[in-house]
Image 1 (cartoon, one colour):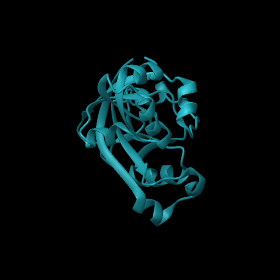
Image 2: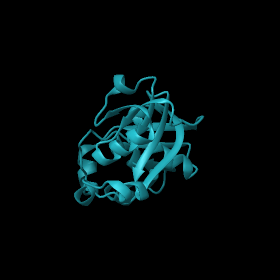
Image 3: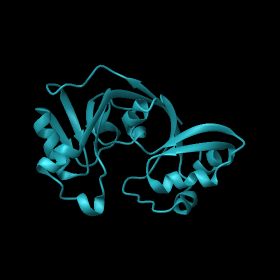
Image 4: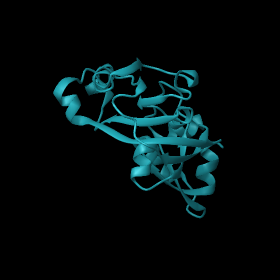
Length: 181
């Protein structure tokens, strides 16, 4: 499904990036109320949402305004989240983060790990994954544990490390994800 169609047919409540939140002004208030989120599936299930819609954002894309998102008319997937038995520090895991400091910290936390800055389906398929991934890639992991840096701002926090990074690191519940395209 396309995002613009979803907005046209539904009353949409949005969680995540501000530009996406601003899409609420562009939705139908007469359709069903649905949830759209750019936030991690781990955060969504902690908020009580086992099902929601997630835009498929191309890697490296930056959207600053709702109109840029509307112009892109992104694909949208229906996401179903399941809580799983926890991934432990001893498990063999794939670590995924574009942030160097986060990758390094996670390597110390998970002794049997392989770090990646960017992954594709084959890198995570059937594996235990810790880090930051979009829902459309999480679906291929056996289990996933999200890692978020609280109030992360790429323009200011690129070199964030050490104690400050540890204090801002938020590690989510272990989950799995099903996607309906």
